[in-house]
Length: 352
Image (cartoon, rainbow, N blue to C red):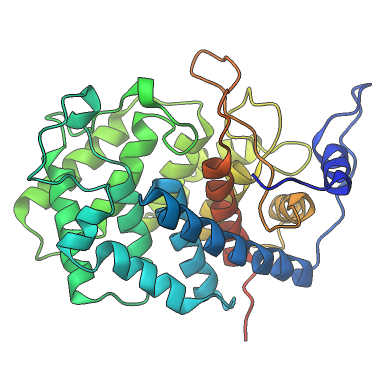
């Protein structure tokens, strides 16, 4: 993560922490539409640089540095914000332009390589559904890209378990990108739904139906992302808002005093990942920037953005509640900036 200035650190401390005597958080100033526009416009070059640097140096289309920022950039473009369109189209082409390019992304299994003996070799590389969701947000796709998305759909179907789920390896859990089995399943279902039309092969349509049925039958969860992804899936499926209202109300009840949301209830503070994600899904079901709870969350994001266009994040706690120990925060920083950009751009379009 880029080093924040001392002034930024001081300001964030005022905005994000509770006073020592248990007082309410320091008030966050109201953001004007122009300030929201500026926040998104600062985030865009950050996302372009972060995703580009990761792909150039790591040579891997990871969830947090490919699918998420590409989706955010595409949404910003749709909402009237200036982006480097050539960068976005070139990167999508470089990863999905052909089967050979998809294999070179290092997230699609090479059929000529020896089988992966590790347990995770049985599972689905989650970079694939993230990339598929991002690609389907593009205004148009080339034929080679469409063929790569069909290959991804086939891989998703091949890795589905008999009960309709997909394997999740807790030992490899990387929250919040890969929160749990149900959040991963929601991403997989979104990716598969993008490829399953009336003319789709029967195995793909059956796999989608089984996956949806499994997720709907999964036990209720207190995890923030489970609630957000449930609303996201419902909105993308065209469900009426009243069918999701109980989950929406649960999300709204989790809003913190500073206007933001935290990824999970025990987490110590609000952050851009959970706040941006919540704003985006609420925007999809009809919430607007003028509503008080939404305005407070927008104010939180504008006030806490760092000068380089990113937002401050911390290493997530492990399933047993132990503090996170990740030394590389670049992935969560890029993902959080992606969600913040998605939420802000959707709620406050740039216009013409």
